[in-house]
Structure formats: C-alpha cells, structure tokens
Amino acid sequence: MPDCTAPGAFPPRSCRLVGSCAHGGWRCKTTTGRWRRSEPIPPGRVLTIVEAVRPADDIIRRASAVNDEPETGQEYLQVRIQVVCNKPPNEKCYFDTDEIKAVGADGNIREAEWFIAGVEGLLESGEFFGGSARSGKMFFIVGKGDKNVVLFYDPWLYGDDIYLALP
Image 1 (tube, rainbow, N blue to C red):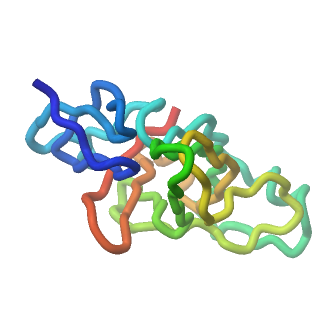
Image 2: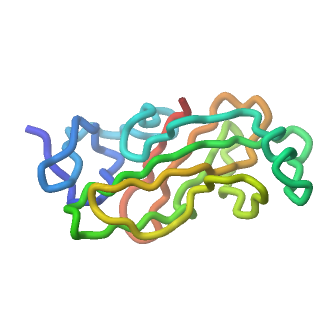
Image 3: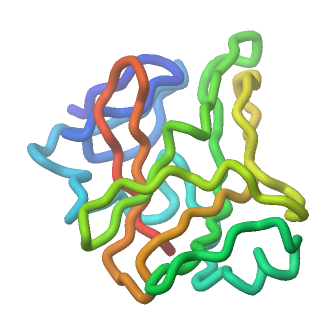
C-alpha cells in the first residue's frame, strides 16, 4: 500500500510518485535510490518543468544589453516551471527559487541567474494558497551541448534533493 507524505511537503528521494492524497500530500511507493541525478523524475511530476529552451542565448541578448554573455563553452538554459500548492485552500505554501539548481556532466552545481533584465514572466519566490500554482521562467548558465543537465530541488531546511529531467 502506498504511503502519503505530509500535506504540501515534497516527497523524499526514496519515493516513487503514484498520485496525490486526499489531504494534499503525495502518494508514493518506496523505491530505494530513485530520483538520483542519474535517474531524475520524468517531466510532469512534483515541480513541473513545463518547457526548456536551449540554447537561450538569443533570448537573453534580445532582452537587454545589460545581461551577461555566457563564457566560452557555456550557454543559457531557460526553463518554465510550475509549482502547485497541494494544501487545503486556507493554508499557504512557500516556494523559494533559490532551492532550484542545475547540474551537468561536469558535476558543478549551477545557481539560477538572479539578474536577468528585459524578460517578462520570471518565476518569483513567495507564498501562495492551497489549490493554486505559481509558474514562470528561470535561467541557468550550463555547459554548451551538455546532454546530462538536470534540475534539482535542494531544500534549505529539510527533505531530500529531488532531481528533475528536462523535457
């Protein structure tokens, strides 16, 4: 029988998602070692990566001349992410964009670019109520042509890292 996580909590790495629970948590079956960097959650689960654009250098260039150019051998990755609050309507969730990171074949952890001028619809940190969602764009500078790039949720206080495959 699958177990349920706490309402609004992200499931642990050892959880294979099989649906949501009536109280707002996630229903999962325990599977040792799942959702590792080499086995990321497929698109459409937990935090949803709705879209990925690579390279996104032209988007950044057209948006504003003040945006940084990636270094040689690197490129911009644009992702559009949706986060759903699975708590009851009168309870709040908090999402922090600093908890989403990227990692590629070189093993270096990449923080999201925090200064991107001229691009509308950037994902912002903040509170939102149960039953609602936040969505927006985030940008990362990653290795040019690196096919092993995945995003991961790296919680500040508690919980396991959750790796997310790019669509």
